[in-house]
Image (tube, rainbow, N blue to C red; front, side):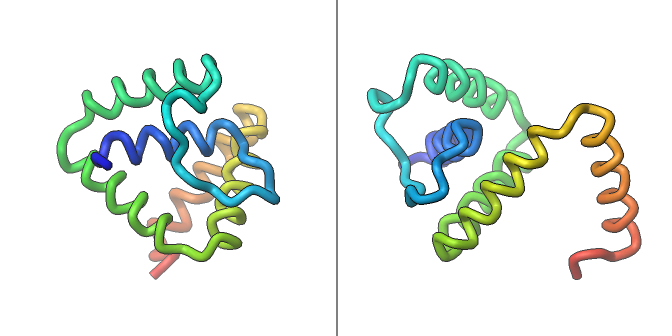
Length: 108
């Protein structure tokens, strides 16, 4: 499977908020709803416009995600869903705190 398709499927799966009991897997295009197909196609077009270095970064993230145990993948999905449900002001506060944490060497 090509890198863009894996990124596309990951984005579609994350955006679709997969039920907690279901294990994540890449679905065929025909298995996506029309809305998921539209979002996946939009994501693919944005991905294609990214510089190669940025696409490589997303490919590496996807590979790391694929190597995680299913429960860790689900934890990440839940965190992402919680982040996406925040109002814009709360999300910006979170992003600013995260930037400060990273500047201080967080996550090393």
